[in-house]
Length: 223
Image 1: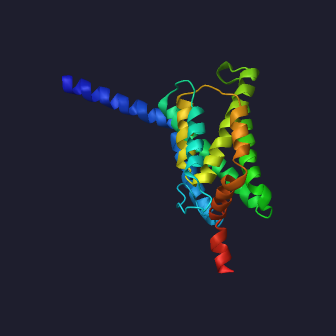
Image 2: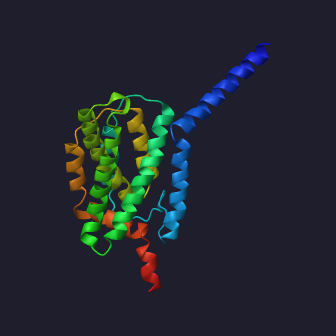
């Protein structure tokens, strides 16, 4: 009888865990990630979840360290359900990856503007997407606007973290941690830091990775 009770308890826990995965949208997030892989390949680009590291002459370890520190500082959120944090970490970062590629490709004829447009365009759209939270579980309009501004600040850093490293899993992890340990910070510091990233050797590293993301080096070699 004890064995049956233990077995029943285990089955119940498994069902709850599976229900949590489906309810929180984790499976949908993984499905979008898979679809994006094939979609971007069809566009003729590399799907850079983990872009092969080719050290740029302008790459600086201290800048990477600063990006990681800034992203870590941004981790002050409340503690929700674990699977509720996994879903946006994968889903939202995949969505923003698509936005970044679209902006980079759309402005590829304007090399001076493609990276700033991709960073701020994807961040603004990412922030505005949170307007749908208004009224959700009684969330007020003021709280929604605060959230929109807060996540924009994070999105500036995450977009640059991806473009600087070529590792999409890095912003995915930080997004997951932010939703798992959450406190909204003002957008000012991340915004100023993101502007600083757009100049000098820091900018050149993102330019080099943008060429890799858009597979420009491969196309130029074929011409």
